[in-house]
Image (cartoon, rainbow, N blue to C red):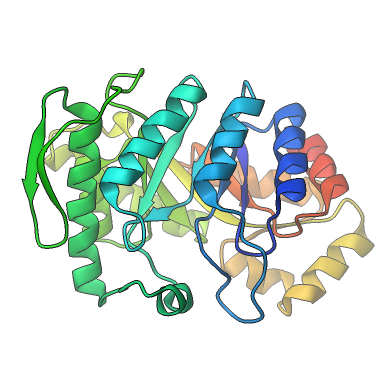
Length: 304
């Protein structure tokens, strides 16, 4: 059965009061999880509030008992992999193993320019990403000190203590819609692959490609969970739905062409069933209006 989670864009005005209300609501409503982005600021001015990722996840870990959670995704372009591994292990322990560690290469040019981080060109960015994945996985899985010599990261007899309570640390998620490098990295390092804003037909194509690469890596395709993060435009009434569609500046058909789940309660349920049929095991629905708690409740009533 398809698992339904919520995803928030933290850079679009997330504050402590908003975060705490949404966390409690998602826990109470029955969604399987709550995920959020990791950005210092939003993509276009003016700047908005952007509650720090790891501090917010620490609060969630201590104030919930059921939901899974994690970053979608945290990048090595401004998070050192050794520090990321340490924080993720600690937060996962606090939550009794409910963290999924979503890792990425970085993409938003504005925040890197403003805060002085080098985003790099695409090829070099993926080289750094792969080095970061090696560092994180070795620190989480190795009980003995490790050394690593790379172009971007270096370790010298490094030991991560305390050791993760869950053997090997939290689940690792790698996201992206690429055909080559992304699925290859997912096949080597990930426990979960996450697609972003694609149609069920495209997901099925990429899913089959990942199966093939996993088999080449001598891994059981069933060992990697398949998930997708996509937009969600939901209206409990026709008027509410039309208002939300109009605010996007696209027709309902255009939204569906971009893989966005949009429509009435019955239409949204049908689209989620299509995602499940294409191989999606968990969907993270992007909830943009951080103050629309009534809408979140209505969504839960419709799809859970």
